[in-house]
Structures are given as structure tokens and as C-alpha cells.
Length: 293
Image (cartoon, rainbow, N blue to C red; front, side):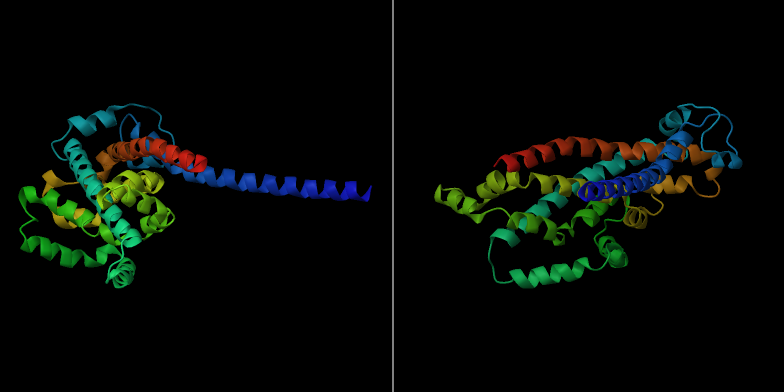
């Protein structure tokens, strides 16, 4: 009888704790989702825009004209050009950064050479400092090379976002260290070169981390504002979406552009969502394959 009372009291406590935890998580979820709901609602706001209207969570009228104006009204700010600029820069930077990180990680994990440990220590110290601390020096170096004017600005941004990617190899290297080196040795015995071992054995086994690297390498330049603003300056034809969205919120434009800013912010999230959906498939396949193995 005492055991039954004890088990029922423990069960009651567990149910109480579960209820409290679920309520807390529900509140956190609502707080987290509310800004996105507000953003989407304001992007669909119709009618006349007044400064007091934006305090209302849900608009009285809904329309998609704000999205249409983003792509048709390009006299002041050309959102399609900014979107295309950012997409090209992000894709190029993502490819280069991912290759650098994979190459450096493989060298650190699989190859033994004299300056390996000093380089790892140096890279760790460098990554302790945020990238924007070097933005002044980076700008003058790019200016000395003639990359801060005209059509060279996108190339300058790609260099900024991808040149230092090799120092961020620690996470990928840690994952590669978990792959048995016996697989590499077996490949060498079969006559495979280091490049063939890297591309045909190591990379397929690194798919989960490869997905993570691709997403982070794409999101960096896609969301960056500091380096883009520093290098683009007043060259509006090379603006990225982050600079364009910031410009829409300036004092002289916020009254007429706020709803279009919300629409642009919604559209900015679409490429990242598509990338995540595409890469998630490969992540799940790699994880299921590793479990079966």
C-alpha cells in the first residue's frame, strides 16, 4: 500500500513538472514566433501608411502590393539588383569558404607536417577576435589593390567573406578526427592518391558537417552588413540586401518604405530556407547511413 502511494506521488510530481515545462516551452515558442508573424502581417499591410498604424499587430487590409513594388518600383532602390548581388556573392563565397575549410581540416586531421601545431595555435588565437576588428586594414588593402571601385566591388566582398575561412577549421577537423584512419590506409593500399581518398572516402563520411559548413558559409555573406557597407559605400548599384533594407529604415524613407522593408525581410529568408531544406535531406541520409554502418 505504501509503495502504491509512493509511486502515485512520484507520478503526480512528474506530471506536474511536465506540465510546467510544457507551459514554459509554449510561452517561449509564442515569444519567438511573434516577431515573424508581425513581420509577415506588416508586409501584407494595405491602405494608407501612417506612423501609428505600425503599432497595430494585424492590419485592417491585406495586399501583396508591397511585394510587387519591391520589384517594380526601382527608381530609388533596386531590390532585384540588390538581391541578385547578394545571391552571387553568397554562392561564390560559400563555395570558396567550404573548399578552404575542408582542405585545411583534412590537412590538420590526416597529414603530419612540421608547423602543424603552431598553425593550429595561431588559428585559435586569431578566431578569438571578431572579424570586424580588421575591417579598416582590410579596406585599405583592398583599396591598394584597386578592388574598392566599380565592377571590382563584388570581387572584393567575395575575398572578404572567404579569404579567412581556412582558420575556422576546428569543428570540421574534430569531426574528421572521428573517422577511422584505417579507411585511409586501406585506400592507399589499393593505390588511391590523397586527393582520391579525400574526395571519395572522407567527404562522403563528412556529409553532416558539410551541410553545417555550407549553411554557415552561405549565411555569413547573406546577412553581413558591416563589410558590405564599408566596401560598397555610396555605390548603390552594388548594394546587398542588408544595406538596402537598412536604407529603407532611414528617417526620410521609413514612412513610405516600412511595409516594403517587411516584405524584403520576408523574401531574404527564402533562400536560406530553401538551402536548409535541400541540405537537410543529405544530412538525414548521412546520419542514417552512419547509424546502419
